[in-house]
Amino acid sequence: MEVQGTKMKRTMSASSLSGDKVVNRQNEDLGNIKDFMLDLDSGCVSYAVLSYGGFLGMGDKLFAVPMQALALDEDNKQFILDVSKERLKDSPSFDQDNWPDSADQQFISRVYDYYGYQQPSWRSSDISSRQR
View 1 (cartoon, rainbow, N blue to C red):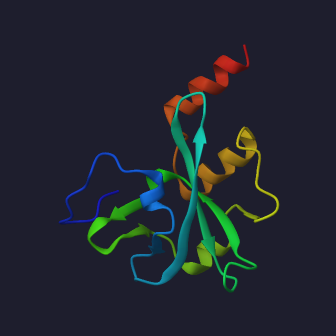
View 2: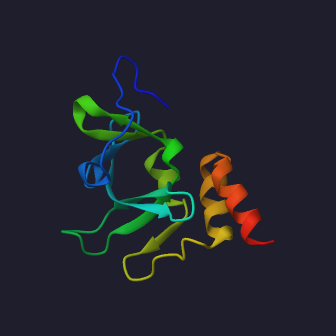
View 3: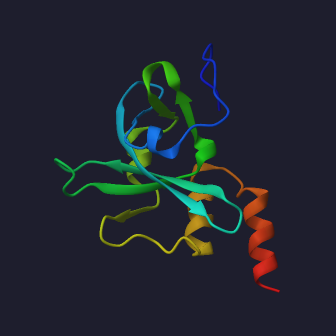
């Protein structure tokens, strides 16, 4: 997904993106990027962790979001996620003290299916090669 009229960089550090605001196309605040989960076998980002709700970092709900669902708006230092607040609230989530196992194939499948994306090909090949 691209933001129209915005020049996009090809690589950026994860630390420069962590904490960035996330909005939807209606410019409603959806939270901020808390972290990025890496697939250590491939070195690719498995999903972004979006933090929403709570107060002063307490009680935040965490959502797993495929990177393909996020568009970086570099000019405004924010990401755009094309979902309504209501849809976000029903997406796969977890709490601060109970992060999912990043190798949990069912969780990853639910995340990608919910947002309407296929899992990246590097993920599928890694999974099938590990099961042999």
